[in-house]
Amino acid sequence: FGNKSKIDQTDKNILIKDADVSLLEKTSNIIENANYVGTDNRGTFFELNAKLAKIFDDKPNISNMEIVDAIISLGDGRKIYIKSDYAIFDKSTNNSNFMGNIIVTETNNIITCDNLDLIMSENLIKVFNNVTYNGEKGSIKSDEVYIDILKNEVNIFMFEKNDKVQIKYKN
Image (tube, rainbow, N blue to C red; front, side, top):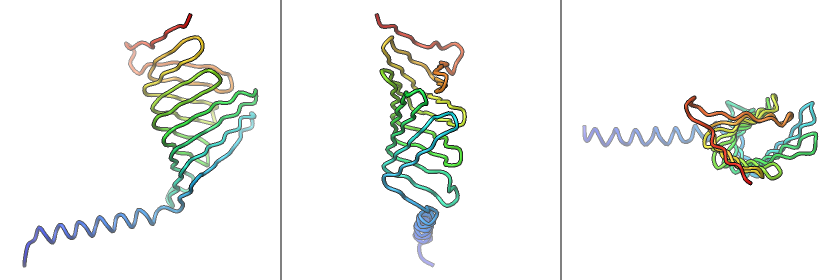
């Protein structure tokens, strides 16, 4: 009956091609230069912009975004800017998960990290993994930072109890 391994390899190629087609069929929308805006009842306004957004049929409220810029405008006039390589935005909750080369700026304060969760329902920003903060008064390195954007309060954590947050003050 011929070479069985050749038949198996051909069948595998057909299966792979079929899987690629089914993945494409599950994508309902690919949007270039996507823009999402929203507000909460406390006067916080946000805007998310992405070079590309993908929405899949099985999760229509989730937008998978690439090359992302976000602006959070607070009721007191402050603005927080977030840039990242990727983000996942949930249209039903207005929450977002940012990933890759994240830079957060607010006035003269800059935070860089690997991951950031923007939880609009709690007015909370969680930055984590390789967190570095630089500001007018100094710098901080930690594993995780929680920022209450309405109260302007910050909690700084390390994942391991024995590890210490590194703080350097400027003169």
